[in-house]
Amino acid sequence: MKVDLTVLAIPAFIGSMVGEYAWQKRHPAQGERAGDYELADTLASLSMGVGSLIAPYVADRLLAPVTPRTGRYAKAFIGLALATAAVATVGDVVQRTRSTGLLEAGTVPSSHPRATATNDDDEVTTSHPAPVAEGADLPPALRRITGGSAVTALASAVVTVSTLWSAETASKKLFRLTPLDLGTGPLAYAVAIGGWDFIYYWNHRFDHESRWLWAMHVVHHSSERYNLSTALRQPVAEALTIYVPYGLLSLLGVRPALVQDARAINLIYQFWVHTEVVRSIGPLERVFNSPSHHRVHHGSNRRYLDRNHGSILILWDRLFGTFEPEGEQVVYGLTKNIDTFNPARIATHEWVAIARDVFRSRTWSDRLGHLLRGPGWAGAPRIA
Image 1 (spheres, rainbow, N blue to C red):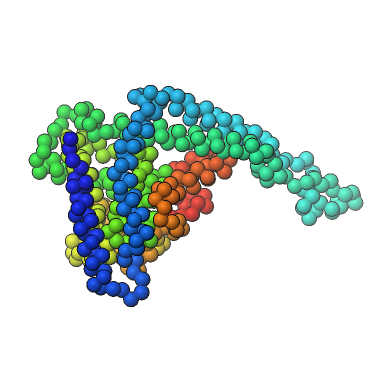
Image 2 (cartoon, rainbow, N blue to C red; image 1 turned 90 degrees about the vertical axis):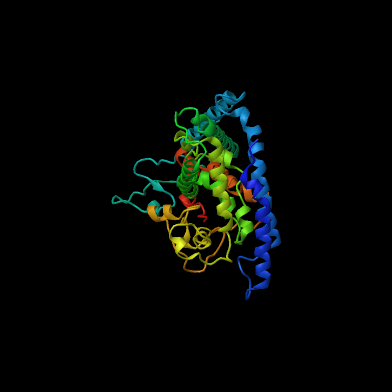
């Protein structure tokens, strides 16, 4: 069994954090410093890091039975999605029908200034009560059934789509479809590492542009601190997302084992950029991602939102218009912080927020918007 390089790097991660903490003690700041370690914050980050290592194994066991084409209960799960979507749609129709407050021709609501006025023939204009706001006169049970069915339908669809996408784009599966094989030499590693970095840029960018993907990625941005422990605050729900498949590298002849090595190298590189100790790496910053560039990425300042998505190379941001140099003091965290160190809340708060918005929505266009559009769409709080 091939050992994950990120697991082998754990002692180096811990040693680096100890070294950073020691440096901070020798160089105390005047007042509070965002890079300083806070016990509760650090424990939350470490617990999320451990969770990210365990989550794939748990997800495989939980999601395998409902994965389309191979899962034992996949058809039933798809049926659940379709049935609950139908219930929600019927509920929408009933709500719209019962909420329609159309007035008779030639009349005005009783709340209108003209309701008590007379016309040219000195006849009193007929008035009617103002239409009731949409959904206000509906039985609570109907609203709960409709909203709950919509949440169930979208949740089932998310699981179905993400598991199918993951299974169909796996490196091993795609590698069997190509006659190419780059072997294990320097060229193969260069294609694997460079290709992973390029795809990572787009996936990371999409993580910030779609609320579905952001719900998974927000975990990493939830800390108001910025030190090496923040690098370990990793998502635990990657199995519930879709992405530009890294398995595409295998179609170019990159062996699946090398794809996994490229993933590990990419993650290991990202660890060291989560620090305030290193202020600059000089001219290398024109090509490579650095602590300075990544501090910008973690900033909730308006000018820093959705910038510097690169991992190893910052070239992609420069090429595709998402680069921003570090200037003003970075404010870390979310534009609306969740103020908790509870790992369960950190991992689930945005999923819960999406479910709440979907539950309250009256149309499928709004529900899909709350899932697929940007995190700040339709009045939802914009988060970094």
